[in-house]
Image (cartoon, rainbow, N blue to C red; front, side, top):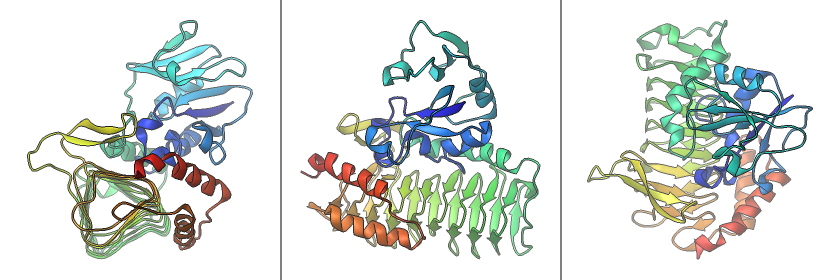
Length: 394
């Protein structure tokens, strides 16, 4: 038996984050969806995603495959319900299908996730469900994801000791340090939710942190950083300045002063010193953001929305991002004034193109700094993104 995480028709709606990963590889809390399904079920996990991503994120083979909505936040109750499915059944939540157990070699289509085949036996799930359907849902669901992940990862375990140089506001038991984690001379407030510090991560002196908060393995919170939860910074991130309710998927840097609010950064991004994001319009009105599904700016229904940045994108010092800015993959952002609200993938400054060859050279150098290789599969994905986003660079 195995778990197959389906993009469930959400690939385009979650761009630019899904240019380089399936929906099931998003990380709203401590764990990616795939890692959490693996932990909850003990089963191998694969992906049913776009063809150009399958080389890096392959499907999985088993005598029985349970196809699960990749955008749904996994929980113990949901995992138990999925494991109970029999061939020919669909698990339904209040707003649609959550999982399928199809017979033979059959697989779901995008349409099945909105209108499941009538011949399937229906099983209803009545527990709470959180779904990632748009990029901003990552920071909106971040608190629930962190709280659930902490409970799962720390059950029956004891935290590494917290240094007495720190000040704790709230319940000290809501702070969990993994092996090798360092936290010194900082203020940790758990009244809003737990604080989890990953293996070999470091919170430097003078930081102020409000939970829910997660700092991934090997990541660093720089001296004097101010973090408002819910916020989650994935493995090997470097974060400083002021951050409010934001998610950084991993391996990215916001190492200097400047404000990042209600935002999502992919992997291998870098924000130059004193970069600031606007997350609220002066009119306090609804924020519009670029939608790849609509190929236009769309009303998001959100009052607070800052920056959504795809993998491997960078910006120069003193960059000012307007509310609802969407930057693609491998964009190099610099120039005078506010950048446009939609910055295409492989954009170079104001109107030029970052050639694929040069972009890959930079990716390789950046990843080597964290001892991660740029694989042939990575290069194929980025080459595909370069090709399909050419019309946006005009």
